[in-house]
Amino acid sequence: MHAYQITPGAGIDSLEHIVLPKQELQFHQVRVKVRAVALNYRDLMVAHGTYPTSGAGAVVPGSDAAGEIIEVGPGVTRFRVGDRVATAFFPEWEEGKANPAKTAVTLGAGGAGALSEELVIHEDGLVAMPEHLSYEEAATLTCAGVTAWNALFVEGGLQAGDTVLLLGTGGVSIWALQLAKAAGLRAIVTSSSDTKLERARALGADVLINYRKTPEWQEEVLRATEGKGADLVLEVGGQDTLARSIASVGMGGKVAVIGGLGGGFETSVQLLGIVIGGKSMSGIYVGSRKMHEDLARLVSQRKIKPVVDSVFDIHKAREAYQHLASGSHFGKVVISI
Image 1 (cartoon, rainbow, N blue to C red):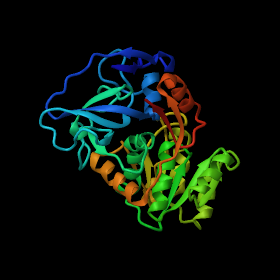
Image 2: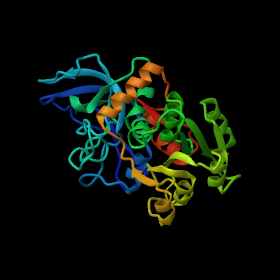
Image 3: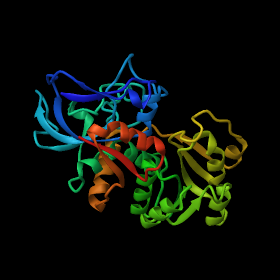
């Protein structure tokens, strides 16, 4: 079986082709012919050694895959041969609150990853694909889609008419924009590119802010909301943006912390604004299989088509990683297998 592996800490150039022995199916396992793998910032962190992995040495990367079941093992009841499926980010987190046991195993870091021709996985680690999606589109639900769903509707608890602030135009932010508009939310989007902002407008963004032209963009958020502030911010920037995100949220609002793209995860913020504003921050660590299923149901009902920036052939996997690292993408970067 052909696959790719990467050495954590050795960078993107350590991504290399390997051949793995065929794995026999155990009880409740299925074999998936992988058709597409969507990349996340997490994959770059694994490459650079800033994301924890189990064990030492090289790992098969990739958590977000879609494909077709080609074999089922003994005891399998949820799927059968021919079903089109996508991976759940946490194979052992079915529903309810997260805990260390449910989040111990993840593909591509805490377990064997998906960047391979085939994936052997427990049936509980899969979700049925929305029928109208391609494999490339369906692979984007696993991490970015579920993260956006969790931030907006589970942790965020947003309702129609609420306002959400989305930082940037990466995978999670664009997924959140599409979900926000499907749910009747008002969406404010920031970017350093007017071209990307216009693409966000085409997806339904209500307010556009170029943060290079408007460095104090939190003031523009307050102006656009008549001083009330946003009900929720999807914080992806880290230390470079967190203080402004907190200032952008209205009284009683929330900051959903998803990543640290700008300057990393280490930060120092003034807590007074959080306390007197009755604001809160929540860390969003993707979500459960049930969240994935709920997301897939809405995507099917509304015929939402996830935004895929580009699709790279498996033989150009390094180029896919490099494109993601460049930050020039709008939506998701996907590898086709």
